[in-house]
Amino acid sequence: MTAAARRPNLLAPSPSGRHPSADTRDWTDTWVCVGVAEQLTEMGAVLPATIGYHAVHVRRTATGLVAAVNARPFGGCASIPVHCGSTRNVKCPHLACAFSADGGVLDDTNDPVGRQRAEFVGDGRRTVVLPLVQWSSLLFTTVTLTSAPPHPLEAVPAPLPATAVGSAVLPGNWLTTPPRVASAVVDAIGGDVVDVAPNLTLIHHGHRRTLAVFSKPAGQSRSTVTWAHLGPTPALDVAATLWGTSPTS
Image 1 (cartoon, one colour):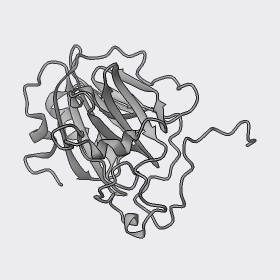
Image 2 (cartoon, rainbow, N blue to C red):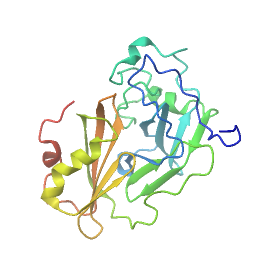
Image 3 (cartoon, one colour):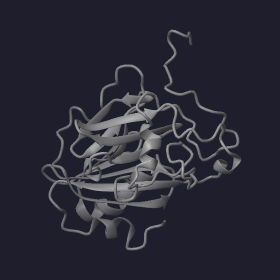
Image 4 (cartoon, rainbow, N blue to C red):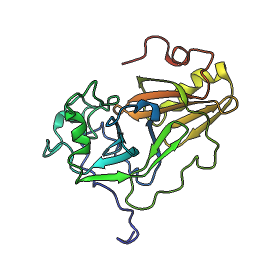
């Protein structure tokens, strides 16, 4: 492949031999489901959304939702510490790193002085804005420095906005867990199952009603799985049906 034909990676990945928790695949130009719009209700709120080596985030601004990555996050580690090479993404005060575990939304409640959010946003001079698409309430972004590819759901009518959202950390790779989790509820609600690569499964079960299940990596064999019911509130308890009352944490 010539230099002219090579796809531009946003950030060059670091050597990963000692760091099995990282997803080493190149996700350039791939639309990834990263969150639900209703999660970001507060101005300035930030949703961490790691994609491969990129500590992507989505934040709510005065003009709407923005996806971006800070090309110089946190200013902390000169190299990746050995202890970050476990099979689980580590709990670390430096969240804007692909090796730290993505938590939930950061806002004025759990980040009152904005220190953690500043690691993602910085001073704004090195923030690279990424394409962002919203389909119903689902948020998708892609790591690219060129024009974004077509979105896989752009021709599909969107269901109504989310009326219920939940999440849990479960065993399983982030790419294979959504269809497995969705299979636990499809018999109860019926409908048509659609897998949307790489990390989203949809169950369409009625007019503008859809159950969405997507995941983010929490390590080599752990996933943070989020479900969102798009449309009128379902009659059944989705959380209890998906993983009972005691999800793995």
